[in-house]
Length: 210
Ligand code: ADP
Ligand code: MG
Image (cartoon, rainbow, N blue to C red; front, side):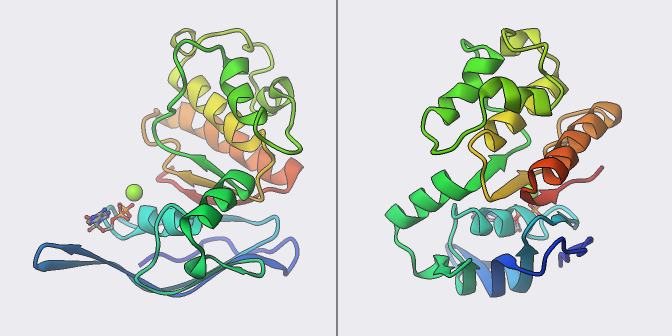
């Protein structure tokens, strides 16, 4: 099963608490036990790395933390809010206001520049970073007007990271953000995530092989 690798808390306040979470997928007559009783705390400002072999439930756990999926049993608390008791509308608001997601594939809009891809999100947020500032944080201050096709894979992923953090989420969730990149490029992407955690203090949970 998966365990937090790094637990040096900047402060002891838990932003998110997962307790006794079980996830069972029912596939016809077969039950798939994706999570068998997971406990995890994300404290304010910490960076937690989730490690485990393929199929060990990492994405399932991250999706539950991010309000994209519900546990079968157990509890997920975001500050004082019980996500396991929340309805769809509350979960949508939770994702919109508090969560930044980065996936293996960047999901950028091809017809929009780097700056415009980030602006899609900041237009909806309450206290966003300027798109240029978010892109600068990931080392792309000189690529604002580039379209995705004019950027390398690692640069596209950094645009996706800028998009995720521009709304200043409480929690940044990254599911194998380096999965489609070579080692050296992957390191640049991880460095961008570490810098955001350090400089913006964004609580971060990261699944990675690098
Ligand atoms: P990881 O991200 O660590 O590779 P996952 O969380 O994606 O693992 O999957 C954990 C287990 O749950 C796997 O056995 C997978 O096949 C199963 N699983 C994941 N999502 C679903 C789903 N939507 N329906 C059925 N089974 C699923
Ligand atoms: Mg996965």
